[in-house]
Image (cartoon, rainbow, N blue to C red):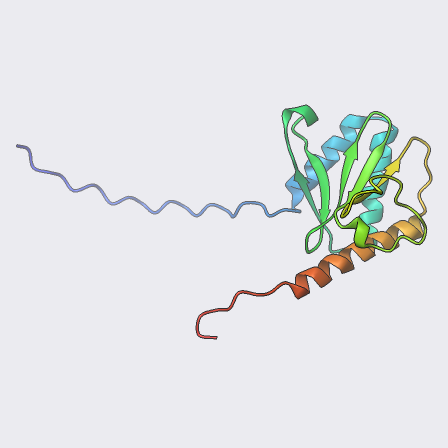
Amino acid sequence: MAPVKKAAAKKAAPKKSAPKAPGTASASALIDKKISTLNDWRGETLARLRALIKRAEPGVAETVKWRKPSNGMLGVPVWEKDGILCTGETYKDKVKLTFAHGAALEDPAGLFNASLDGGVRRAIDFHEGARVNEKAFAALIRAAAAHNSEKEAARPRKKTKGA
């Protein structure tokens, strides 16, 4: 029987950089690509809405969810702050922003025009040539962020050991 050799000590593998967090360049790059592939009024509209969202709520994180072959693996742009504020979907005849907790938000300007019968979500459908009430839209984005912050603050925290 041959003697058993001890395995050579393995060199420690170099540390890999941490995976990119949601909202970093990779999600933004996917959204950029989605906008550029639309190459029509829908891309322009989505780009404009994106800029308005980022201006209204500077701490917003861009993420991409629901990547699958049917949407070219580009996914759905999502804007988050303490949870999802809204998603941006594109269809042949519209760009739809769906607010995750839209039913809980005040909408004095009447921007919500879709998914009005839902118990939680509300949406805004933008059709070709639609004008955006930028002031009311920014207020809606800020209201969504405030709603998420309030929900986050009210969430019970886990107790740590020794506390």
